[in-house]
Length: 352
Image 1: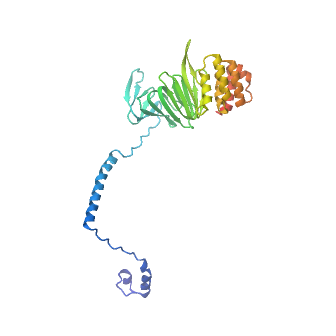
Image 2 (image 1 turned 135 degrees about the vertical axis):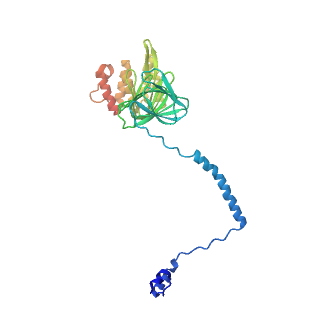
Image 3 (image 1 turned 45 degrees about the horizontal axis):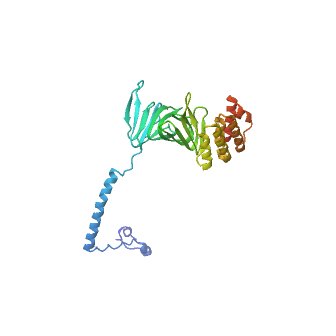
């Protein structure tokens, strides 16, 4: 057999090659016949439909190219000592920035996107506005207007804000160093222990704190409040002969039964000794194990020894005191010895 047959079939055929070609013939590529041309009327109708589809699609393509394009992600701004990273999310807000050594502030409207604002500046959000403040690399705070927030301190050891009024929603990583992030208010300071919470300061300075996840110390005059996931409290200033003090409701879980919440609120707002004793007894009657933390706060903060006695007995029933914690010191004692025992009981009860 000539090699020409294999290349262009010009040489003499080989019987074996012919036999192999016959066997493979059924597998040969079958070319489809060209479709018959459509009648002129059908072709014209198809052309009109194609033109109409193109006309309808053109505005959509234009809108997509102008407005529907996914916005580029906001530029990442690295953490810088003594400056805050602020981002306008919605609405209108401004930053009042004070020059070093000056009491006069220059007000600058915030533009969308991330920007760095120095310590000491104040953020003012209009109604409906939202501004995000980055807390180093561990989370952020969203400020909701109308609101007034002061940026007090930004360092590797402390991120501190002061909320004059408005709402903040804080979300801080549980990996954050305890006490790294703090938000001051006219009635006290919320110290973050790795959590997510919402805090609202009203026009008169009264503050409501709700913890969605994690733990918060709310440091107020007297003794701090300890709140964990699902708990809330309300703190307001109350006039006294010498001025005013911060008065707080007892922390309680928001999913507590209505009767528990109502009786505890009645105790918190009772005025006379008789009312306080009556409402406390009512609350303790309905307290569950979940209210042990509330009872602990009453034991710590109650000024009247008879009511401390009631709180001690109920707390001991719900969560027996650990070794080294005795009734006499907790009810009638004072000073560092009492503080140490109550703190030991709290750690045993709350675990942190």
